[in-house]
Length: 290
Image (cartoon, rainbow, N blue to C red; front, side, top):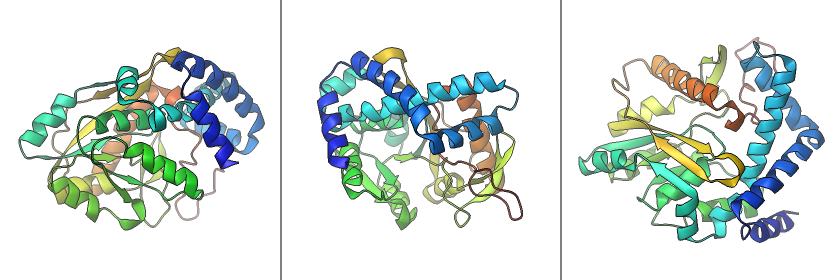
């Protein structure tokens, strides 16, 4: 089944992006109806985070999320097989000069990248600009894992570390001058996490950002990636580096990160990765959401 999926992506990647977007729109609506367990996760997340929205509006938003996620899956073939020229044309990356300036000053950099659907597009585009370090989670399907690693290391000399190995390797790479493409906003269970608010919900969050920033004496530079409508491409926007970060309070720093992510998600809710069980880990004694 995996080989059939990959063969389909290979065939799709030759198509113009607007055509891929059309197929993603159709398949996204179909998957919304067909994949019931994931639809329940999606609707639960939207109900928890947007209680003020009417149910009909949340369901409309859920369909848009399915379309965006499906599009990003189909368009991943572009990252895995398309030419550098084509990817440069499809993915705009603004503010890279901030990273270059900090690098020239000898400052380590953490790129803070929330889970919007275009994050892999911007990651590959950034790899064309600088040699970076990033982390990945081991996949159950090793062929898919192989392709993910291939896609993230096609350009330049990228360093990819397993999340299971911890953050020390990333810190060492940052001290050698590699910016860290950091994706912090998933639920990795109670062992690695603390509870801080996200959309008003106590949410298990890895406090890695302030710890990494302190260990590497790094600047935190946020990056938000947006999928343009109907196959017009993607755009990533680097924001100014954060001031007064980290502080001596890891919990407050992690809460600041979540508050920033929440604010960005509210601007672009249909492109956030709501299909993940973000609130799976609950404080002791609290009922589960899923």
